[in-house]
Image (cartoon, rainbow, N blue to C red; front, side, top):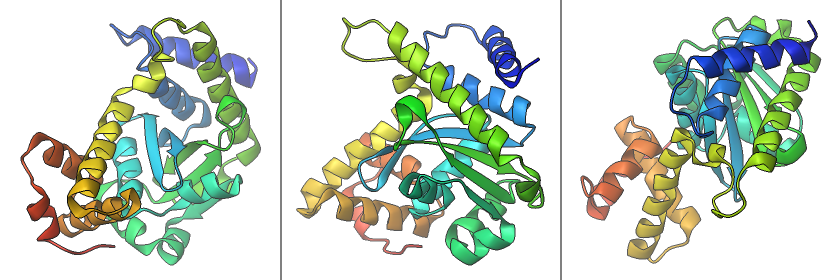
Length: 246
């Protein structure tokens, strides 16, 4: 079988294991198919939103989703560099600790991953999308065939593009994968940032920095702190009363 055929078969097999999916779980299925085809330990899909934000679309496992949230909470890491440079970024544990020590510390402490390969996604998501590959053995970073991984990234982009073409044009919401569970959770962050920005009379970037600082000081993700702020379990004074940051 060709690479494209193996990937298509993996996506179909993942689809048969999921019920009640109107397209919003497509990114998760694609991420799991990536893991199967590339024999990596985790994968995540994300898109850049603005100059500093990132919206996750899907992940192969809860651990892969956690790795994305850690990077977003810290505000720096290989995925953001892949977004900015448009080039693959490969980093084992030693490289992660050298270049992104706060992210590396959190990744090692809370996930099994010891290496990350971040690839820009071409096609419909060119300049915005990225595919993160997570590895438990840092030596697997140099063993990975980057050319094959980039080809798989193209297949992921093609699948998302096909879903975009097939999506109804009348509802104004776009394809279902834009409303994946991970994307819906991240949307709460932007609601919290908006509320915090008004309370502080500050720009959104500054409000996001405050949210990140509080989350880091509390050992939590920005996503979980934002959910508490929006729900009322936290108020602005709580966030401002615990300064800190990576």
